[in-house]
Length: 396
Image: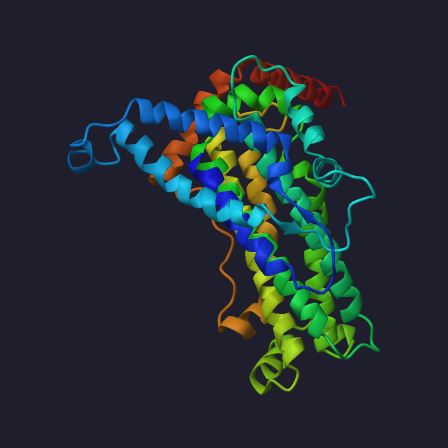
């Protein structure tokens, strides 16, 4: 609850920053959401329950937040303020270029644009019997997918502008990239509640509902932003800086010198802003990967090199190593000279998957062994697959 209030707060601030006032549109209100209405009733019931069983007066001065009851009352009190802040924004949200149909009620307009009933049905159609964090898990992932889908579209337009030799003005693109980075801040923030609060036990309860899939199957994040849009943005900017000389655009030293001139002379402020904003895009891409791998390590662990690798429910073996290999793509990231021109240093090398001999290695190995017991049937299936591979290899 605490983290979700934080997320809604950050999202509400983003809405204020991203509406540039250029386009008209009708307003949505979260209060027209049937999902919100149901949640609001449950929240009020919780408040009444807490009021009917209050703390002792002395608890405020004598107990700290390590006491479960004090923790609950304290943070619920704080949450009421966050709720007031985000609700003030989400109560009236303009949707640029989108208007209510004639005779359409506010509730119908909300459902048509947000399709919240479909989102809820996608979760509730899975019968997990006991209460789980499936709704929250999917909400954070789908918010990120939607935001990154928009980011990809906007950056794609910026790429086209950069490679258009007739185009000499980039004010619009620089502003657009800045907005994209505000969206990407939310995307990276969305990982934190999952990493911090979803235990292996809680994840185990929802994992069957997620099917044979993994984070590497993300359409907008991995296949769109990470593998296509971001690399093309960097390469198109390098090409523009070097006046479309392909050989020069591949020369890190030449790109560094030219980028430094653009940033220091400031004769092309919009292009200088494009360099900075592209570096910020890199930082969000890098940060997302660096944070996401911790979720994999927490849930599946890291198998020692001399042990049988742990298999995930999707069939992937040693998924943390796979996620780490994705991070290693930054070893040769073409952002290098643009990053150095902006910050005066090269980007940090990709981090190691664990630190040998330190606590994170201990926990990663420990978790991998524990998960083998949790997903025993999955491990057995993976072992049969390995055995078939050995037999097939031997036969050939």
